[in-house]
Image (cartoon, rainbow, N blue to C red; front, top):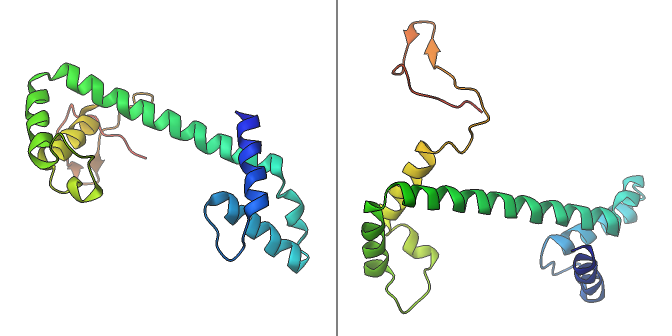
Length: 151
């Protein structure tokens, strides 16, 4: 993975254009150059190793969140097989079998969006947080025996 990222970084160095940044790597170079031109000593911390570590962190975090979310949805579908046909029908009606979905389709997939929100709401996705009971100085404001997670 490191070798791949260093190759990408090196390709960006060759084709870097400060006036037309393409992505986070170009923005990193741009910030580094800006600090160097001002004589800012923090520019020395903008190394290829730091950039590579940051990119590794982004990729790792992305893989973890996507795989966790996908697992959550698959689990919800397995627990509620009766929903699968409803979701399939909506997807076929809105998108059809002949094209890829677009961002414009998202607002039209009302049942699908509701399913995702309900799956998130009912999931034990953050089960490492202790359960919280929401109360106020006036007494309990939510039903008892419902778990609320506070962030």
